[in-house]
Each structure stands twice: as C-alpha cells, then as structure tokens.
Length: 134
Length: 139
Image 1 (cartoon, rainbow over the protein chains, first blue to last red):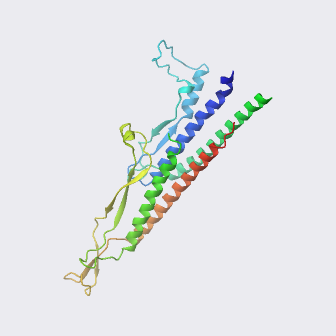
Image 2 (cartoon, each protein chain N blue to C red; image 1 turned 45 degrees about the vertical axis):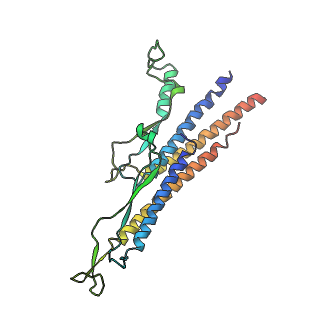
Image 3 (cartoon, helix red, strand yellow; image 1 turned 90 degrees about the horizontal axis):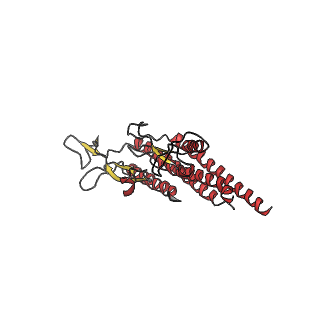
C-alpha cells in the first residue's frame, strides 16, 4: 500500500535524474563550443520511458523463461537516461557541431522542466502528508 | 553523475576562455614589440582547446567532462615587413620585421571569447538555480 503511494514519486525522481544528466550534457556542450572536432551530445530518456510504460500496461512483450532473456520492453525501473553523441554533422569548418542557440534554448527548457518536476514532487509529498494527518 | 559535476564543467570552460582572453590581450599589447637585443619580433600566440576527459571516460568512450587548454602555440605565419631604414634592426633594403599580430583579428577573437565566457556563466547559473531548487523539496 505504502509502496504504491511512493510510486509516483519514484517516477518523478527518475525524471529529475534525467533532467540533471541533461543539464550536465548541455553544460558540457556549451563548455566545448570552441573546441575543434568536438561533437555535441544529447540525453534520450522520455521516449524510452514512454515505451517502457506502454509495455508495462499491456503492450508487446516477449515471453521469457530465464532471467537473462531479453523481454524487448524493458521495465520502467530499468529505464535510464542515455547519453547519445551526435557524430554525423559538422557545424563549422573545424569539425565542431555545437549549435549555441539550440543549446541555450535547451538549457532554459531543461531548467524549467526540472523546476516543474520539483513542484510535482513537493505536491506529492503534501498529498501524502494530508492523507497521514487526516 | 556527481551532484555538482556540471558546475565543474562550466568552471573549466570559464578558466579556458579567461586564458584565451589573457593571451589575446598579450598579443594586442605586444603588437609592436621587438626584442631590444636580437631584434626578433614578438610572435602571435594562440590557445588550443581540447576536450577534458578522465582516463576511465577515455576507455569507455564516454562523455567528456569540460574543456581544457591543451597548449599555447605560436603562430608560424610570416612577420610583417615595414620600411624603416633608420631602425638599428633594418636589413640591407631598409626593412624591419614587425610582429605578426593583426589587431582586428585579435579583437574579433576577443569578442568570441567574451561571448563564450558569458554563455558558460549562463549555464553555471542554470545549474546553481537547479541545485538550489532541489533543496526546496519538503516532505
């Protein structure tokens, strides 16, 4: 029962982790804006989380008979933010592909996304508190 | 991912961009400098940046963590020749070699370094505000 009550918070915590990792990656992209040959990276998380959540709620899943079998869905608990390098493009003659405008926008978006998650976590705790205190 | 690794990343970039500005300032300051003894002109210097990677990150081909100044190189381009037959360093035709510093180029590089510095300050402030906001979670 209590585990269920914390389920939403666990999910939000995953979101916070992803947002923090993304902040780190964007910061690194901005730091290397003048580094010759540097390739920018990005964080992929939301799409894989969505996929895992859909799979858990009755989507496609392979039958597994051993723990090492791959079930082609991934459970929500296992979803982690993945850092993907963008190696295919060059933005400038020195081989660097950091688009500073894109990174600045993503930085701002990610910061407010993080704020929103924090507010949601706080309100989840407030709800629990109300339920406990009556 | 360390709690404050983002701050460290931005910090490394601030250091690197500040050094770039220092070297550009030195170039502009020495745009007319000739060694008083040998007559050898000042050579323009350029900062070379590279990704800062830890050894384990290098092994795993993981993301780099910040930027570092790999070295400061001298610009090998030709010195400027000016006609000044009265100079003690003038050659047989009356020409004196002067530093290969182009002030306009230096000023453009200076603007570029300043803007990069500002971008990193913005990123640092974003990280700071995120960390501060996380402390506001109350049970």
